[in-house]
Length: 175
Image (tube, rainbow, N blue to C red):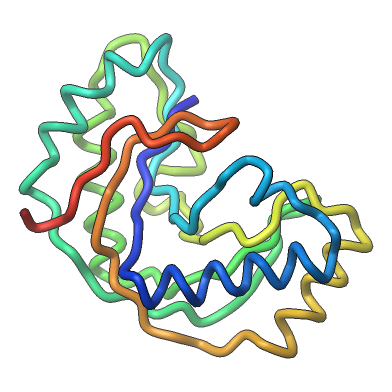
């Protein structure tokens, strides 16, 4: 599996990383740190035999995608074990999702996860993963105390391998 992910400006990265670190500290679950997962929002999850078939399409997006502003407004859970922060699905995110989907959807012998397609996507940034029920409650309690809505800038896009998270290609949007 490979990911197409949005990355953020430095201020947003600091906020998200602080929340990730808080959840790690409060729950004792170090999955995100141990797997070197940076703050990011997955736009698409693609099954492919190898990454080489995805690189030309990814490079084709360069210069076509623009940076954009989003509002992170809530926290949530993907049961049974993912804790996240979520933005409002605004026009910018909807268009970003559609552009990425259109670019990768026709590549032979690949499939895009049904959970990462336009109008079938829950935009989110994972703050904690592989959490137990008790760790989920602890994470919720920690974020209930410290989370506040904030504005973020999407500034980069990347093509990554998973486990551990490793960028293969990454570039600034609008350049």
